[in-house]
Length: 300
Image (tube, rainbow, N blue to C red; front, side):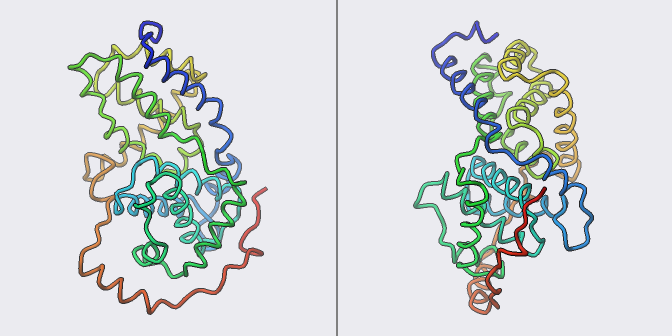
Protein backbone atom coordinates (compact mmCIF):
# COMPACT_ATOMS: atom_id res chain seq x y z
CA UNK A 1 0.00 0.00 0.00
CA UNK A 2 1.10 3.54 -0.75
CA UNK A 3 0.84 4.56 2.92
CA UNK A 4 3.41 1.88 3.76
CA UNK A 5 5.82 3.34 1.21
CA UNK A 6 6.02 6.62 3.11
CA UNK A 7 9.54 7.40 1.97
CA UNK A 8 10.24 10.98 0.91
CA UNK A 9 10.95 9.84 -2.65
CA UNK A 10 7.58 8.11 -2.96
CA UNK A 11 5.74 11.09 -1.49
CA UNK A 12 7.43 13.33 -4.04
CA UNK A 13 6.37 10.97 -6.85
CA UNK A 14 2.78 11.11 -5.60
CA UNK A 15 2.95 14.89 -5.52
CA UNK A 16 4.15 14.90 -9.15
CA UNK A 17 1.35 12.47 -10.02
CA UNK A 18 -1.25 14.82 -8.52
CA UNK A 19 0.10 17.68 -10.63
CA UNK A 20 -0.15 15.59 -13.81
CA UNK A 21 -3.67 14.47 -12.95
CA UNK A 22 -4.73 18.10 -12.57
CA UNK A 23 -3.31 18.92 -15.99
CA UNK A 24 -4.07 15.87 -18.11
CA UNK A 25 -7.37 16.98 -19.64
CA UNK A 26 -6.14 20.41 -20.72
CA UNK A 27 -4.20 19.23 -23.78
CA UNK A 28 -5.98 16.14 -25.04
CA UNK A 29 -7.63 15.37 -28.42
CA UNK A 30 -11.30 16.16 -28.91
CA UNK A 31 -13.22 12.91 -28.53
CA UNK A 32 -15.83 14.05 -31.05
CA UNK A 33 -13.07 14.75 -33.60
CA UNK A 34 -11.48 11.33 -33.10
CA UNK A 35 -14.86 9.67 -33.57
CA UNK A 36 -15.35 11.54 -36.86
CA UNK A 37 -12.02 10.15 -38.09
CA UNK A 38 -12.93 6.62 -36.96
CA UNK A 39 -16.28 6.73 -38.78
CA UNK A 40 -14.89 8.20 -42.04
CA UNK A 41 -14.90 6.04 -45.19
CA UNK A 42 -11.62 5.52 -47.02
CA UNK A 43 -12.37 7.42 -50.23
CA UNK A 44 -9.09 9.31 -50.54
CA UNK A 45 -10.74 12.61 -49.60
CA UNK A 46 -11.25 12.22 -45.86
CA UNK A 47 -8.92 11.52 -42.97
CA UNK A 48 -9.47 7.97 -41.70
CA UNK A 49 -8.29 5.88 -38.76
CA UNK A 50 -6.22 3.72 -41.12
CA UNK A 51 -4.37 6.75 -42.55
CA UNK A 52 -3.77 8.17 -39.09
CA UNK A 53 -2.36 4.86 -37.82
CA UNK A 54 -0.07 4.50 -40.84
CA UNK A 55 1.23 8.02 -40.27
CA UNK A 56 1.97 7.33 -36.60
CA UNK A 57 3.89 4.18 -37.53
CA UNK A 58 5.95 6.21 -40.01
CA UNK A 59 6.67 8.75 -37.28
CA UNK A 60 7.71 5.93 -34.94
CA UNK A 61 10.15 4.81 -37.62
CA UNK A 62 11.63 8.31 -37.70
CA UNK A 63 11.84 8.41 -33.89
CA UNK A 64 13.79 5.16 -33.89
CA UNK A 65 15.94 6.14 -36.86
CA UNK A 66 17.13 9.30 -35.08
CA UNK A 67 17.36 7.54 -31.71
CA UNK A 68 14.87 9.81 -29.97
CA UNK A 69 13.06 8.77 -26.81
CA UNK A 70 9.54 7.55 -26.13
CA UNK A 71 8.76 10.91 -24.54
CA UNK A 72 9.28 12.58 -27.93
CA UNK A 73 7.09 10.00 -29.67
CA UNK A 74 4.30 10.33 -27.10
CA UNK A 75 4.33 14.12 -27.48
CA UNK A 76 4.37 13.83 -31.29
CA UNK A 77 1.25 11.66 -31.20
CA UNK A 78 -0.39 14.08 -28.78
CA UNK A 79 0.18 17.00 -31.17
CA UNK A 80 -0.99 15.00 -34.17
CA UNK A 81 -4.18 13.69 -32.57
CA UNK A 82 -5.07 17.07 -31.10
CA UNK A 83 -4.68 18.70 -34.51
CA UNK A 84 -6.49 15.98 -36.48
CA UNK A 85 -9.34 15.91 -33.96
CA UNK A 86 -9.82 19.66 -34.35
CA UNK A 87 -9.20 20.28 -38.06
CA UNK A 88 -10.36 18.66 -41.29
CA UNK A 89 -7.07 17.61 -42.87
CA UNK A 90 -6.96 16.25 -46.40
CA UNK A 91 -4.96 13.00 -46.72
CA UNK A 92 -2.51 14.60 -49.19
CA UNK A 93 -1.40 17.03 -46.45
CA UNK A 94 -1.10 14.40 -43.70
CA UNK A 95 2.63 13.84 -44.25
CA UNK A 96 3.39 17.53 -43.79
CA UNK A 97 1.19 17.71 -40.70
CA UNK A 98 2.78 14.60 -39.18
CA UNK A 99 6.35 15.69 -39.84
CA UNK A 100 5.64 19.14 -38.44
CA UNK A 101 4.23 17.60 -35.25
CA UNK A 102 7.33 15.41 -35.05
CA UNK A 103 9.67 18.39 -35.50
CA UNK A 104 7.83 20.45 -32.87
CA UNK A 105 8.04 17.57 -30.38
CA UNK A 106 11.74 17.02 -31.09
CA UNK A 107 12.50 20.68 -30.46
CA UNK A 108 10.45 20.60 -27.25
CA UNK A 109 12.04 17.49 -25.70
CA UNK A 110 15.43 16.68 -27.23
CA UNK A 111 18.75 18.42 -26.67
CA UNK A 112 19.36 21.19 -29.18
CA UNK A 113 22.49 19.55 -30.56
CA UNK A 114 20.43 16.48 -31.53
CA UNK A 115 17.73 18.35 -33.45
CA UNK A 116 18.16 17.60 -37.19
CA UNK A 117 18.12 20.30 -39.82
CA UNK A 118 14.77 20.71 -41.52
CA UNK A 119 16.39 20.02 -44.91
CA UNK A 120 17.84 16.72 -43.66
CA UNK A 121 14.57 15.75 -42.03
CA UNK A 122 12.61 16.24 -45.26
CA UNK A 123 15.28 14.48 -47.32
CA UNK A 124 15.39 11.43 -45.05
CA UNK A 125 11.60 11.30 -44.82
CA UNK A 126 11.37 11.42 -48.64
CA UNK A 127 8.45 13.85 -48.57
CA UNK A 128 7.74 16.13 -51.50
CA UNK A 129 7.42 19.50 -49.80
CA UNK A 130 9.80 22.34 -48.95
CA UNK A 131 11.28 23.68 -45.76
CA UNK A 132 9.00 26.72 -46.07
CA UNK A 133 6.00 24.37 -46.27
CA UNK A 134 7.19 22.65 -43.08
CA UNK A 135 7.71 25.94 -41.24
CA UNK A 136 4.34 27.26 -42.34
CA UNK A 137 2.65 24.08 -41.16
CA UNK A 138 4.38 24.37 -37.80
CA UNK A 139 2.92 27.87 -37.40
CA UNK A 140 -0.56 26.63 -38.30
CA UNK A 141 -0.33 23.74 -35.83
CA UNK A 142 0.89 25.97 -33.01
CA UNK A 143 -1.92 28.40 -33.70
CA UNK A 144 -4.61 25.71 -33.70
CA UNK A 145 -3.17 24.12 -30.54
CA UNK A 146 -3.19 27.58 -28.92
CA UNK A 147 0.56 27.34 -28.37
CA UNK A 148 0.15 24.59 -25.76
CA UNK A 149 3.32 22.59 -26.43
CA UNK A 150 3.77 21.37 -22.84
CA UNK A 151 1.22 18.59 -22.90
CA UNK A 152 0.67 15.87 -20.32
CA UNK A 153 1.23 12.50 -22.00
CA UNK A 154 0.78 8.81 -21.23
CA UNK A 155 4.57 8.47 -21.15
CA UNK A 156 4.81 10.80 -18.15
CA UNK A 157 2.20 8.76 -16.27
CA UNK A 158 3.93 5.52 -17.25
CA UNK A 159 7.18 6.84 -15.76
CA UNK A 160 5.59 7.85 -12.47
CA UNK A 161 3.45 4.76 -12.06
CA UNK A 162 6.43 2.54 -12.85
CA UNK A 163 8.69 4.36 -10.38
CA UNK A 164 6.15 3.97 -7.57
CA UNK A 165 5.43 0.29 -8.33
CA UNK A 166 9.08 -0.55 -8.96
CA UNK A 167 10.01 0.95 -5.60
CA UNK A 168 7.62 -1.37 -3.79
CA UNK A 169 9.22 -4.54 -5.21
CA UNK A 170 12.06 -6.47 -3.65
CA UNK A 171 15.44 -6.35 -5.35
CA UNK A 172 14.96 -9.81 -6.85
CA UNK A 173 11.53 -8.93 -8.27
CA UNK A 174 12.37 -5.53 -9.77
CA UNK A 175 13.62 -7.12 -13.00
CA UNK A 176 10.08 -8.37 -13.70
CA UNK A 177 8.82 -4.81 -14.21
CA UNK A 178 11.07 -3.70 -17.06
CA UNK A 179 10.52 -0.11 -18.16
CA UNK A 180 11.86 -0.60 -21.70
CA UNK A 181 9.28 -3.30 -22.28
CA UNK A 182 6.56 -0.97 -20.98
CA UNK A 183 7.79 1.77 -23.31
CA UNK A 184 7.56 -0.62 -26.26
CA UNK A 185 3.99 -1.45 -25.31
CA UNK A 186 3.08 2.24 -25.07
CA UNK A 187 4.52 2.81 -28.55
CA UNK A 188 2.33 0.04 -29.90
CA UNK A 189 -0.73 1.56 -28.22
CA UNK A 190 0.01 4.96 -29.73
CA UNK A 191 -0.26 3.33 -33.17
CA UNK A 192 -3.99 2.74 -32.61
CA UNK A 193 -6.28 5.77 -32.76
CA UNK A 194 -8.87 4.05 -30.58
CA UNK A 195 -6.45 4.20 -27.64
CA UNK A 196 -6.01 7.96 -28.09
CA UNK A 197 -9.52 8.30 -26.69
CA UNK A 198 -8.32 7.05 -23.30
CA UNK A 199 -7.07 9.51 -20.73
CA UNK A 200 -3.23 9.32 -20.53
CA UNK A 201 -3.39 8.16 -16.90
CA UNK A 202 -5.83 5.35 -17.76
CA UNK A 203 -3.77 4.18 -20.75
CA UNK A 204 -0.56 4.09 -18.70
CA UNK A 205 -2.14 2.29 -15.74
CA UNK A 206 -3.81 -0.24 -18.05
CA UNK A 207 -0.42 -1.14 -19.53
CA UNK A 208 1.11 -1.54 -16.07
CA UNK A 209 -1.74 -3.61 -14.69
CA UNK A 210 -1.55 -6.00 -17.64
CA UNK A 211 2.21 -6.28 -17.23
CA UNK A 212 1.89 -7.01 -13.51
CA UNK A 213 -0.60 -9.76 -14.34
CA UNK A 214 1.61 -11.15 -17.12
CA UNK A 215 4.71 -11.18 -14.90
CA UNK A 216 2.74 -12.61 -11.94
CA UNK A 217 3.41 -9.83 -9.44
CA UNK A 218 0.49 -10.18 -6.97
CA UNK A 219 2.40 -8.12 -4.37
CA UNK A 220 1.64 -5.04 -6.49
CA UNK A 221 -2.15 -5.39 -6.21
CA UNK A 222 -2.45 -3.17 -3.13
CA UNK A 223 -0.26 -0.40 -4.54
CA UNK A 224 -2.05 -0.55 -7.91
CA UNK A 225 -5.40 -0.25 -6.15
CA UNK A 226 -4.23 2.84 -4.28
CA UNK A 227 -2.80 4.38 -7.47
CA UNK A 228 -6.15 3.75 -9.14
CA UNK A 229 -7.99 5.49 -6.29
CA UNK A 230 -5.47 8.35 -6.22
CA UNK A 231 -5.94 8.78 -9.99
CA UNK A 232 -9.75 8.65 -9.67
CA UNK A 233 -10.04 5.80 -12.17
CA UNK A 234 -13.05 3.56 -11.54
CA UNK A 235 -13.03 -0.21 -12.04
CA UNK A 236 -15.30 -0.12 -15.09
CA UNK A 237 -13.09 2.44 -16.88
CA UNK A 238 -9.91 0.53 -16.12
CA UNK A 239 -11.41 -2.79 -17.19
CA UNK A 240 -12.69 -1.33 -20.47
CA UNK A 241 -9.33 0.13 -21.52
CA UNK A 242 -7.34 -2.85 -20.25
CA UNK A 243 -9.26 -5.03 -22.68
CA UNK A 244 -8.53 -2.72 -25.63
CA UNK A 245 -4.84 -2.44 -24.68
CA UNK A 246 -4.60 -6.21 -24.36
CA UNK A 247 -6.15 -6.65 -27.80
CA UNK A 248 -3.70 -4.15 -29.31
CA UNK A 249 -0.65 -5.85 -27.80
CA UNK A 250 -1.93 -9.28 -28.82
CA UNK A 251 -2.18 -8.12 -32.45
CA UNK A 252 1.45 -7.02 -32.39
CA UNK A 253 2.73 -10.17 -30.70
CA UNK A 254 0.91 -12.40 -33.18
CA UNK A 255 2.58 -10.94 -36.28
CA UNK A 256 5.88 -12.83 -36.07
CA UNK A 257 7.38 -10.52 -33.47
CA UNK A 258 7.58 -11.01 -29.72
CA UNK A 259 7.63 -7.32 -28.84
CA UNK A 260 5.94 -4.23 -30.29
CA UNK A 261 9.34 -2.52 -30.45
CA UNK A 262 11.01 -4.92 -32.89
CA UNK A 263 12.59 -4.51 -36.30
CA UNK A 264 9.29 -4.44 -38.16
CA UNK A 265 8.67 -1.01 -36.62
CA UNK A 266 12.24 0.16 -37.16
CA UNK A 267 13.36 1.88 -40.33
CA UNK A 268 17.05 1.58 -41.12
CA UNK A 269 18.47 3.60 -44.00
CA UNK A 270 21.38 1.87 -45.67
CA UNK A 271 24.39 3.78 -46.98
CA UNK A 272 23.27 3.18 -50.55
CA UNK A 273 19.76 4.49 -49.82
CA UNK A 274 21.19 7.51 -48.02
CA UNK A 275 23.33 8.37 -51.07
CA UNK A 276 20.28 8.06 -53.31
CA UNK A 277 18.29 10.31 -51.01
CA UNK A 278 21.03 12.91 -50.98
CA UNK A 279 21.10 13.12 -54.78
CA UNK A 280 17.36 12.86 -55.29
CA UNK A 281 16.61 15.68 -52.85
CA UNK A 282 17.65 18.26 -55.41
CA UNK A 283 15.30 16.78 -58.00
CA UNK A 284 12.16 17.08 -55.86
CA UNK A 285 9.32 18.87 -57.59
CA UNK A 286 8.22 21.30 -54.89
CA UNK A 287 4.55 21.50 -54.01
CA UNK A 288 2.77 24.85 -54.20
CA UNK A 289 2.32 26.80 -50.96
CA UNK A 290 -0.36 25.17 -48.82
CA UNK A 291 -3.46 27.40 -48.78
CA UNK A 292 -5.04 27.67 -45.34
CA UNK A 293 -8.51 28.19 -46.76
CA UNK A 294 -9.94 24.93 -48.04
CA UNK A 295 -7.18 22.91 -46.37
CA UNK A 296 -8.12 23.82 -42.84
CA UNK A 297 -11.66 23.66 -41.58
CA UNK A 298 -12.51 23.01 -37.97
CA UNK A 299 -14.40 19.87 -37.07
CA UNK A 300 -17.80 20.49 -35.53
